[in-house]
Length: 281
Image: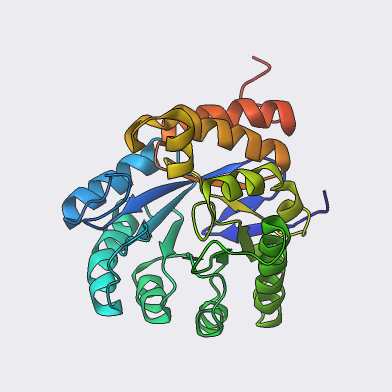
């Protein structure tokens, strides 16, 4: 796989391809599909700090649910939810890498002022969000999404083309290639069978030459396969983590940090020849 460079944030290096990084989910919402939403700031802050101390490499903080049938919220509401959490994380863990899960430029701007480092957009790369990210010097994670599950051709071809176009526009706006992360959008605008097909061919997204992000954690396709409730889908999620790493994925976005950290370490040792510190001892 081509060299995808190194993303640098807060003195930390993210050398893509050397190991896999873990993005922990922090939902500051009352209506998360997985039942882990925390609308109270204190509970969300406690959860975020617990996720970081459990071994997360990044914290992805979001103030609007994106589950099917969710109720959209305005930027002011979203900002009121996420900014206190970001500020508290920054105060308690100054070196933490914080991602803001939003597609709204105003929210991205407020989150950046509070200490967020990365924008994670479930709507790909909208021009106004690209402009904001480029102006603020924020890396962007762009996810494939669409309103329905109809595709004129192969779903994998459509996802690859969409993400490639997002990436090229981001680079044209001045965001460095190593700071443009591509996410196939499992569970968004896809049936369960389409999700499985995209996962089977996620290596094609990795082959575009940009860092990649995979978010399958606790999702409904895993529930249909395992017949388990969201909080019971840890092993199903870990399977996609390991298989994603084998395909070349760089970042996994998960609810369950400890279990997926173990899956990452084993998969990285096999796929990327990674070893923990003091291995020879």
